[in-house]
Image (cartoon, one colour):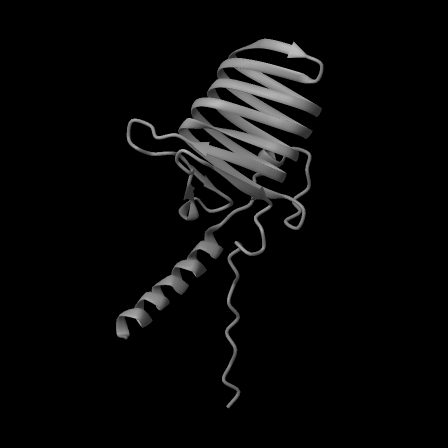
Length: 182
């Protein structure tokens, strides 16, 4: 019985530590968007091998990568740097391939990436579907909201929808300690 009490205490202390050490997106990561925790959130992605698709999003997404990027129905600005070339453009779709960096700001139907060595920060609102693949170390990648200590693995051989901002159900709540009143 003591073991469960100790485990619960450690869990609560860990939760308090995580809440106190989380941080929102930096001004550079937010771009021109206001710091509005009710409307926007921060999502970080990192993987050595995999893919993601940001669907019906608004905000600012910045990522470095090696691989292929498809951008559909972008209403805003896209900056592509590095050794990346445009492979295809038709209507409102553009496909890029190479190693570099993409910064997208505005609203879009989809930004889809697949390849390797990707790191991303998304500040905004929408849905990001991650698809993990095992790399040579049997890792699939990580995603987290504000605190990297609370990172979750990408699924292997399946996909997972990640909602931004973080749903209230998942949010860490600061406990309020009440006096006994007596």
